[in-house]
Amino acid sequence: MALFNPLAKILDENKLTGLNYLDWKMNLMLVLTAAKVYWVLTTEEPELPGPDVPQADHDRKSKWLEGNEMSKCYILSSMSNVLQQQHIGMAMASDIMLNIKEMFGEQHRKASCWRLEA
Image (cartoon, rainbow, N blue to C red):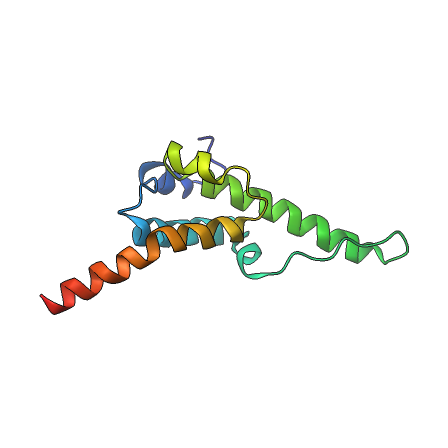
């Protein structure tokens, strides 16, 4: 992966395979925050502005789209090839994260509960 951010090396060395979901997510959040694109995961996509709206609305939409693409690149490049293929067609970084959470988040809650009971 071409490193846009020196912290991205963390993701390159710790790709998501499933069993490492919580560690991967923590590392990803650090990198997305450092790259100043984490906000895309928590912000709704702005409406497509019409021709008669202020330039600021067009700029807001463009900034969101750029941040979403950058986030998707970091997310997809930090997972196994199998997981990449499953998510590459998704349009929004937040949808990828939600799907990954649904795939692996529950398994980690169960593992954590088991360790607490043992």
